[in-house]
Image 1: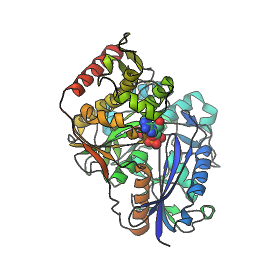
Image 2: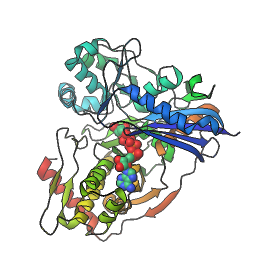
Image 3: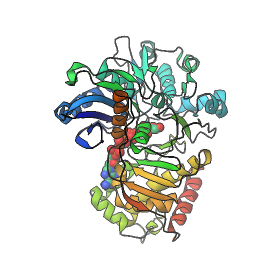
Image 4: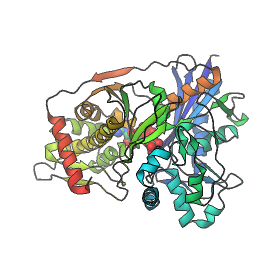
Length: 467
Ligand SMILES: Nc1ncnc2c1ncn2[C@@H]1O[C@H](COP(=O)(O)OP(=O)(O)O)[C@@H](O)[C@H]1O
Ligand SMILES: O=C(CO)[C@@H](O)[C@H](O)COP(=O)(O)O
C-alpha cells in the first residue's frame, strides 16, 4: 500500500475530503457532504459533516495515511465553554450583524491604527467584531466563554483532541498581527477579557495525531490553514500571479514572501499565508451564489444558465446587475442589497439577465483585483479557482474584465489540495511539488467591451452606493 495524505476543506457550503498519493498528489478518492445554509451554525454540525465525509472517502482504504491537513472558511467565531461545548452558534464570515461593532472599532482608534497594529481594518467578517457583538447582545453566553477558536481549529480538535492553530487563519481574527502575534489587549478592550486562545504553530509543524476513531492510527495532523491560504499552497501561487476564487465567497489574493501589507483604506486585508509569508486578500460576500440565484430565478440549471449567458450581447444589452444581495464586505456595505438597472422592453431578456449576473460577479472581483494592485506588485496572470470557475461564460469574461492573462485550471479542490500538501510537509519534512495544470490560457481580446463593462459597473456602483 502506498502512502497517502488527506486534505480537508470545511467551507461555507460543504465539507470536502480528498485522498491523494503522498508523493505525486494524484487524487485517489474524494467525498463531499453539504453544510446547511445560513450565516450562523452550531459547529457540531461541521464535525458531523467531517465524520461523514471522512467515512465516505475512507482514506485508509486507499493506502497508509501518513498525514492529514484541514483548512476551513476563515473568521468564524467558535466560542466554547470550559467543557469545550459551544456557548452560541458560530457566527460566520458572511454574517453582518456585527457591522456596528466593526464601525465602532474603526471610529475608536482610526483605520491607520488597525492597519498598522493588526494588518487589517475590521469589518463585520472579523472574529473580534463578532465577540464584541456577543458581549453586548448575549452577555450570559459571553460570560461562559472559556476558549475562542476558528472553524479549522475546532475541527483539528475533532481530529486530534488538541488545540492549535496557524498564522494564516489567526490573521483573520483582528486580534493578531501576522508579524508580531496575538494582541490580547484588543480582546480585553472589546470582549472584556482575553479567553484561552490556541497556540500558533509553524506551517510545517505537527499539531497532533489522528484519534483512533478515524481508523488511521498515528497519522500526523498538520497546522491547517484558512481556506484562502490553503488554496495558495494548493496552487503553488507564484509572484506576479493572483488567485481569483469564485466560491461561496469571492476572493482575490497574492502570496508575498517577505512583506506584510497595511492598507488603511480597509479594502485589502493583510493576512498571513501558510508558508511563513503574507497573503494580501480582498473578499466579497456575493460570488458564485449570485449566478446560482439568477439561474434559479430563470428556472434553469447551471449549464443552461451558462448557455444563456454566452449567447446574447456581451454587455447584456445595457442591463447592469449590482451583486450585493447579502450585504457586502468589499466595498464595505453590510446593509446593502443588489440592484438591477438598464431595464427596457428590449434589454430585459433571459440571455441578458444571465449575462448581467456573470458580469456582476466578475466585475466585483475586478474591483478587488484593482485594489490589490495598489498594495502589491501588479499581477501578470490570474488563476481562476472555486466552483464558479466551472462556468464557461464566467471564464470567458474574466480576462476581459481583469485586463490580464487568465489561466483556467483543471477543475479541482485547491483548498483541500493545499491542506494535503501541508500534511505531507508535516509528515515528511519536505513540501512536495504537486503539479498544476492549466486547462486553458486566455488573454484579453482588446476589443473594448470589457472596458465598457468596467466603466458601466463602476458608474452604477458610485451612483447607487456612493462608493
Ligand atoms: N457551472 C457552474 N456555474 C456557476 N456556478 C457554479 C458552477 N458549478 C458550481 N458552481 C457554484 O460554485 C459554488 C460552490 O463553489 P465552492 O468553491 O465549492 O464553494 P466554497 O466556497 O463553499 O468552497 C456553488 O455556489 C455553486 O453554485
Ligand atoms: O471571509 C473570507 C476570506 O476573508 C472567505 O473567503 C471565507 O474564508 C469563506 O470561504 P468559502 O467558504 O467561500 O470558501
